[in-house]
Image (cartoon, rainbow, N blue to C red):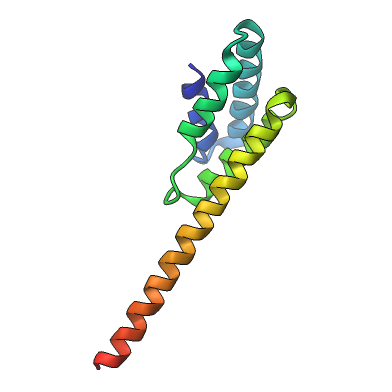
Length: 117
C-alpha cells in the first residue's frame, strides 16, 4: 500500500484548481495514519521510497515532485528525516553524474565527427 501511495508523488499531470496539491496532501495524511497503525511501517516506508524513486531518465518534474514530497514527509517522520535526505542526495548525485557522462559522451561524439569530415 505504501508503494502505491508513493507512486502519487510522481504524478505531475495538470489538475484543475490545485487538486494535485490536495491529492499529495491526502497521500501524506494516509501515510502518516498507516505509520501510526503499523509500527514496522517505517522500515517498509524507507524501502518503498528507495524502490519508487524515479529513474534518472524520468521527467525532471516527476523527480522534483517526488523529492519535494519526501522532504515534506520529514514533518511527520522526523526520525527518518536523515535517511530520506541521504537517499535524496544520493539520487541527485547519481542523476548529475549520469547527465555529466551523457554530456561528455555527446561532446566526444561531436569532436570525433569534426575530425572525420
